[in-house]
Image (cartoon, rainbow, N blue to C red):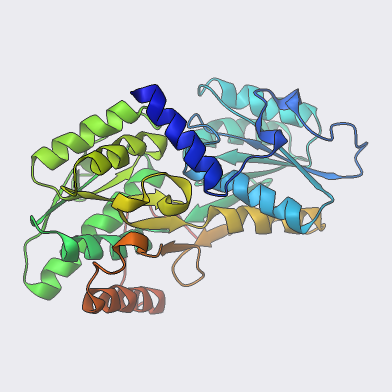
Length: 361
């Protein structure tokens, strides 16, 4: 069953337009295209986190950003290497230093320590990192205040729930994950206050920072196991913040005959997963644009400033919620308007969203 599901996901991934080029086929830094360009081209080299290039999440998004940069400037060469384990981070980063890549992109907060170490040892090398700010001058940080968009999603979920219970879970208790969960919980609380309701959040307690985790970003069985437990407690809308592991939740939701729906994260799930039918919306982290802009600037000779780097929020379209797609006719017009008003109020500073995991500007 699992292998069949994997095949379905793979085929939908290709159909969804996020087709990986030849550069995506290799498993080692030396695998790739245009290695013999003699320095004429600007090389942007990406090291994935352990979730892999087709996690339908942050690795996929970062690669899309590199692809778009190349599309806009054909003097840019791109390639990536996949990390199979955390022990691969330093090896893969060092491999690209040795290959004299112009821009080396690390994807994900788990890569912070390795990137900081290799960047410090190679001060003339330009690095970039998604979802972290190691505080090193030659690492350009791209961070996202996803609590803001997740706040909208929490309000939406509370407004759509029939059981009065919604749930969320994470891959690991790290800032790029818990920031979504904090925003989601606060959005539900805001709904409760505005409407005099008592919708419960299962799987996360913002006050104690304790909740449900798969401890993995890949194993779909673990994602399904955690969301099954939340559904058993009454949750009818689930937001997994667990990369590819969350696909265990979306496929189970499809098999549940409408018992519950899902809010995806990072990249619009209706474009990146085969499970659009059960996706209420997605809390989008606009990694592709952030990566694209950074690489285009660097390739154009601009010095990337590590401080302040880039922080995406609702005001600069660095984060957002995706269209409702197949749920569009099911979300009441009044609720849609309230969710939009929340966006405007957060962007204007009328509503302040807080999380211990928020990036510093």
